[in-house]
Image 1 (cartoon, rainbow, N blue to C red):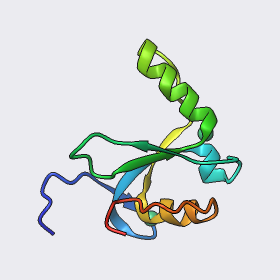
Image 2 (cartoon, rainbow, N blue to C red; image 1 turned 180 degrees about the vertical axis):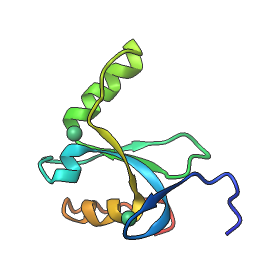
Image 3 (cartoon, rainbow, N blue to C red; image 1 turned 45 degrees about the vertical axis):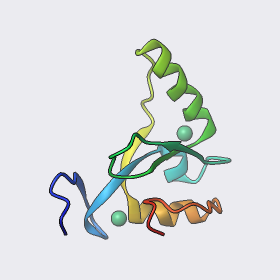
Length: 97
Ligand SMILES: [Zn+2]
Ligand SMILES: [Zn+2]
């Protein structure tokens, strides 16, 4: 444990853990697919994971700076990894496998 700058989320199942952004559709299992959104170098996680619909909004938000992506949530990466298994996502969440 040497990452002082780490920002952690408190998870009921996993206590303190790194987190990533996902959307409620993935949380609820209603998303058809998952899009990996690469995060800037030095971020806690390598990717955020959101559904294609929210990804569209996310892209528009970048352009306008004013879009509403109300459906995004911060989730513990261990919980997120379990969620993503349903979607058969092959990539690791944190780059370490
Ligand atoms: Zn979504
Ligand atoms: Zn968790």
